[in-house]
Length: 425
Image 1 (cartoon, helix red, strand yellow):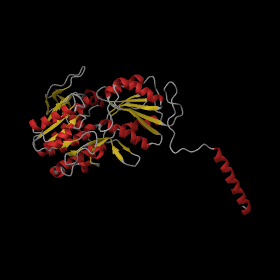
Image 2 (cartoon, helix red, strand yellow):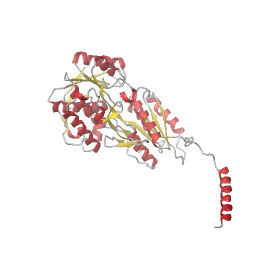
Image 3 (cartoon, rainbow, N blue to C red):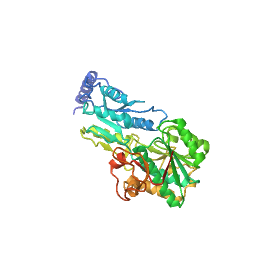
Image 4 (cartoon, rainbow, N blue to C red):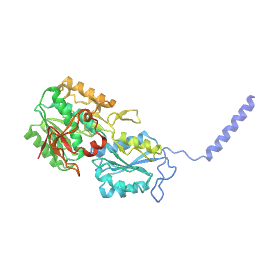
């Protein structure tokens, strides 16, 4: 092209571009918020923003349960440019439906109740809002609808690994669990820990007792403190763990100078509770793994998502920064796996236990081993009688070794303590 004509052509392009730029809408710094839904409360058609709404049964700050769910929502909002996270906290059962409808009217597409007792009422909204996913965490009920999803992580896998470590650390041969009350969720998680303790004790050729005493609810700080002190003073427990939500058990472990095994979240690294001189190990729950699976289904327009989600260590999520997290894992002071074991505790744990922890963790991440598949599940004769399902008599082999337990059994029918657990009155 003639140079003169070229420059004239380029000048014309600049003028045309300027005109079109002046007519174009101004750019925004962030994706627009979800548009308000129609009066019916259903999501607006064509709205690309997906809003995850979590109803937390408790306050968020300073709790390992709701704190971990809140962290999950924030991580997903960071992972996806078109995802927003909103929440309500301290939600009672009679508030879950009105709060859900309020958030749906504001654009919520996935609504979660993070505990079964206040999440189950959401099933009543499933037919009314067919384009919304509703989710309830499982305690024992497995009711579903095409858009009503039930979810729980296989925390028992990490608890099994914690049990191996606890068995190695006890010198008195006595481990104590401050627990809330017998229900399927609690009995199953406790069983995973107890099986780990028993395998660790057998490997080390030592006798270890596991004592459980119930406080009566999830958050009773004074009752939990009294139980923890009783376990230490009367039963000579030198390793404490809990199936409750206050920090009282940890406080007692710190004051008494004994080991504590944490649950649900990396309490040292996440919250700065105590330190690794007391906290031998914890496990961390990444609820975002299951929520991400739901999110991907919703983004794909799936009207029939999987309605019972029970992921374990073989399932993971890649976060916005590239970090890969399995559903549950050993974690303490920001470290994972064997590195998560307290530096003070590590020299006290025999190499054969460390090797077994590594082996079982690797196998569970590969999906090739599971404690509830490999072990016989023998009833202790204690537990919780369910409607139409009595507690199996002591010594009953409820599930044979090597047989894979069904999801329905694990989530809704595991109503017994495993043999060798001592339940205190």
